[in-house]
Amino acid sequence: MTVSYQYDVASSTSGGLVKLLLRWRGSVWKMIYRELIVFSASYLILTVLYRFVLDEPNKRIFEKIVHFFSTFVELIPLSFILGFYVSFTGTRWWSQYRAIPWPDKIMNIIALYVSGADESSRMLRRTLMRYLNLSLVLVLRSISMAVKRRFPTKDHLIEAGFLTKAELEMFLSVPSVEFNTFWIPCTWFINLLREARQECRITDSNGLKLIMEEFNEFRSKCGLLWSYDWISIPLVYTQVVTLATYTFFVACVFGRQYVNSPDPIIQGKRPFDYYVPVFTVFEFLLYMGLLKVAEQLINPFGDDDEDFELNWIIDRHIKVSYLGVDTLSCDPPPLVRDCYFDETDMKLPYTEASVAYKKKTYRGSVAYMLVPSEQQGLVMPDITEEQHEEDYNTWQKQGISQRRASIWTIYGGKISKSVSSSGSLENIERESLGISSNTDEIAQDSGHDISSGIWGCSHPSRKHHLLEHFLDHCLPVDCDKTFYADISICGALKVADIQGRQKYQTNDLHSVFTAVDDHGEAGVRRLIYIRRFASGAPISFSFHEDVDSKMLLEDKNDWSSGART
Image (cartoon, rainbow, N blue to C red; front, side):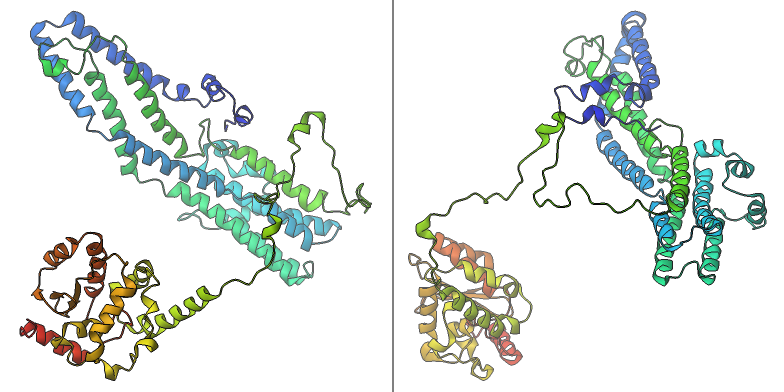
């Protein structure tokens, strides 16, 4: 029942897909022609009533109705609702097909590990495969109308060779009032497999394990098929989509009518008389077609053109199963030399019709790129970069890894790489400046000197030197080295120039950023540094010295008491 058109679209040609519009089976025309006839007839009746039957007062009323429905149509998000619903049902449709079990893998494993050419071994292999296929048939009888019509009763399974009378009696003896018993043949499969193992018909434990793994997969897919039939798409979702679609086109029957109204608002939407609403018909084909697509895909076990060929699958499975474990489970063909046995450079033939498909081997995009001979000499690369990377990694371990979580710990490394002119922030080495990493040397009086809060060190003689060193090495050469900032734990910001003049304190960070930004490009770059300080407590952001809790407390108290003025 599935419509296949792969051959028609094997090659992209001019109008290749247009030819598919002429098909009837499985086409949009077949799905919606009844609804299209009803819609067109309704539209035509209303048109005739307005043009030839209604008097002028009733025409004015009809025109208001048309205007109301025309406005209402634009409020329904039909494309979104239908698109999502069809996408969901399409995904579910393909998942249901993938849930159909195929016995090929377990058939090959049984043929390998359940050996023997005697009648008993053949019966064992065939019966194992028959039980698997019987479980599948029992599931499909429960969910598919096509399979139910083929096997309306369990006696038909006996006539078809899936069951014996003794097996049917055992099957019917199991209570099945509260649940489906399609899994009973699976228990027969396990019991028969256990007997084969005890009788040493299966000698390889690993082989028995593989058989059980494939059996469990087959059994789980049978259960999944039954679950898909049991758990449907929520009814309310289907109702909403159906209601939205039909309401949309009921509104279109009125709202897309042509009216000749003296009201300019109503008449403005209909500048000329169109006897056939062409684009409304296109909308109907698209939206109603999508709804019918979802209607077909929502249950692929029915009688629609796109539903699965389950009866064919049953026939194929049982035939392949018996062939694989019995007819073909015999001595293989004799070993012979192939026609290329002594050749190392094989040349395989092509027919005249397929010569054009012979292509050269792809060897890579730069396989044929030539490197000039004067550039092919080996040289020792400069290792400054590698050394620089090692220094940076050491700096990272000594600094950022010891800091508390903040914006700087996340983005500091990235910013520090992007603000260098002659190097970068990490180029200011601890040893060359004589700064110790010992936390005892951190300034306890940082709240009393503006540069101490920035650099976090207790070397008054070097504070301005460190700041100037930072400005010289970490800012572009053409920057106006005027502002630097310090933020305390309470969030107040102090800005001053290098010599300490024009210092002021504010809690309004926006005003400070605006003041700094007035200096143009240099100010924008300094705004980045201010944000570094704003990420947490006052720290050394060249060496990332952490500050102990005592100092932070003192710093906070200094700010709150107005000590920094």
